[in-house]
Image (tube, rainbow, N blue to C red; front, side):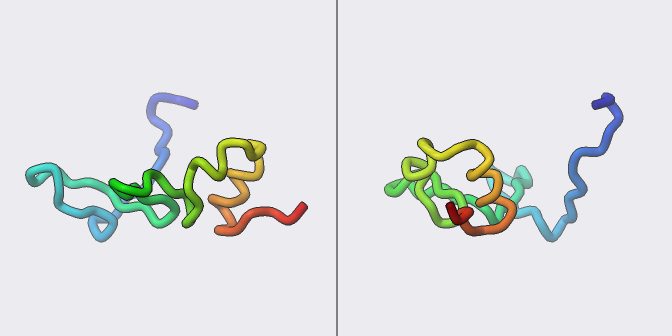
Length: 68
């Protein structure tokens, strides 16, 4: 990967104002709840820690866990 390689294209519509006016991005694949913790595609991270890495990537790309 070169220093000049573009990794992401972000549109202004993907930004929210937060952190005292500093723009922050939004994410459709994960969220953080102060009481329930971090979730990927609706699954608590605690339920995903014992999965294979490939299964978590599949979940993030397809929004469902792979079938065995």
